[in-house]
Image (cartoon, rainbow, N blue to C red):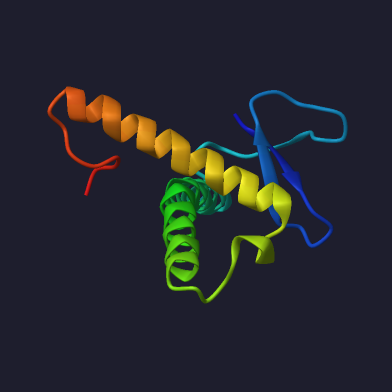
Length: 113
């Protein structure tokens, strides 16, 4: 049977396979509190994974936005902090090199659409 750890309000905050220091309460596997806790934990894990996956897309959107602002003259490279400008420049160079490599293989662009 699983061992549950509770917070000061009595809500389950962790489920363990074995007892631990201060964690001795056992509940049956199908107990409604365990099912609810694990369902919430699974949903939270899924949401975290979804956010992590979208982080790369958001980074690219921000890069594209900065490039557009620079191209149209709304901001100047000197307006950006030097570490940020360095990273953007490095990524631009890497994308350019990747486009060249993919072009040799017959691919177009540097990211899937």
